[in-house]
Length: 232
Image (cartoon, rainbow, N blue to C red):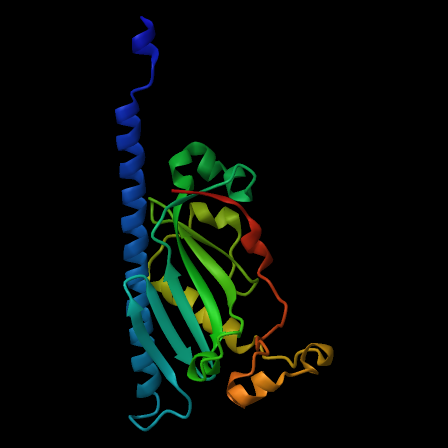
């Protein structure tokens, strides 16, 4: 075999990688559609529970874009945001050590749906300095298998990746777990030392638009998000 024949087929490599990522993208987009359907159904169920009377607190869904869904309940808002790129886990990530990935490395390519929590008043009063939180992210691969990185209440073990399929029931479970985590994730008073001084400008701007960041845990950062990825 001559040297030319030993070289990898660059065009075939490009084609295979592109087809893989396109397949994962379609699977992720289809899963995102499940989230949308479930949210719409939950809103209908919520209002039906009160026999058509005005609900005591809001429970509303908004389709805010092709890759963004909004679920508002009580004083909170959850945003489900699908990333348009496909990611592969770094070699150091725990999921790469599972037999499921070792048997087929193409399974490590995933689409991502991020779940963010904000206070509803942050948008109502245009408090642009308020803080939101990434409470979880859903990874979906070419086999429609998924796992979740996130806070304990909604996260899954990496070993579940081999058996967990993204179905309508799974999507509902993720949404319900996210809602339950959010309503139990209460707003705490910020430390006195951080809010004891207010400028004249801030006060004149109006009390609702004070440049004092409001968040459920002032200074909290989602530590699991520090994992590095290779983006497409």
